[in-house]
Length: 359
Ligand SMILES: [Zn+2]
Ligand SMILES: [Zn+2]
Image (tube, rainbow, N blue to C red):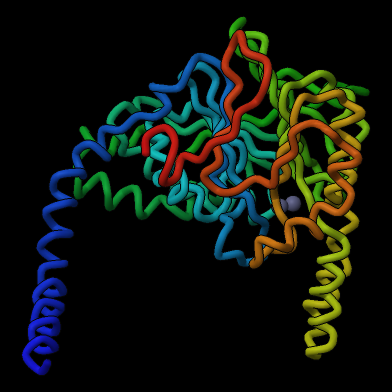
């Protein structure tokens, strides 16, 4: 018996010692394939939305700050770049060199905190020949000027270290491209080249102003990103008939529960924040109302507040949303891919992390 135990123990020690070399061998074998993976190039022609961050400024181990990659054909646009955007896009193997532009919905920290990292990753990517374009409402110039200044030393170091062929100084940093709504209008087309049309529209996230959402139309398919907003009649109008609506969602009930807990713990500042935030985000039920009234095909809720550490909290989070919108309704997760192939009708959800394209 003693011998048997000793044998098992020795084998366990041996296999433990082998784990490092085995991990190295597996990494060596799989890394080239992982590095050359290009799931965007393998997607069917159409519109796709890949979730780079489905959370909010509240720290959430499961969700990064807001970021969505909208893929039209093989063109990639990033709507908001919160913290962890770069990491999650990398896990999804969305090649930063493919990014054509970033579109910002507004300038809350959770929507811009990942811009620096994303820009550097794109700058030194193989295909990059242009500066990162950042399109947004007025204020984007100030945000980008600040980022460019904050990262100026870093860019200089990298060019000095890697050379102009890899880190071209003339395309470092970002270029701000502000747009304004025409007098009396609440929407504007910010890009239209025949194949793809992107429309920005005003939403209500006061006192964060301006705040906008975006509608993408490509080859007969369409998706709308709300940005941060309470229930918005403008969104309902602009989103009319879209295939997919990706909407901000905060549960007032669960937010109150967290706020009450903060107050009971003597955390007055935190309790005040939790009491303040429901007035500038839509509840899941209100997002469902917007989806139903706009007649969209499917609804994905994102910017999930508060964090949902238990899966069983999804039901209380949704409340009666599934009664208020009876089409497909999802709570977005980081790594989700929503696919709208051209010529198709529905919306398919899969994950780009661990499964699905590029896995
Ligand atoms: Zn936000
Ligand atoms: Zn916000």
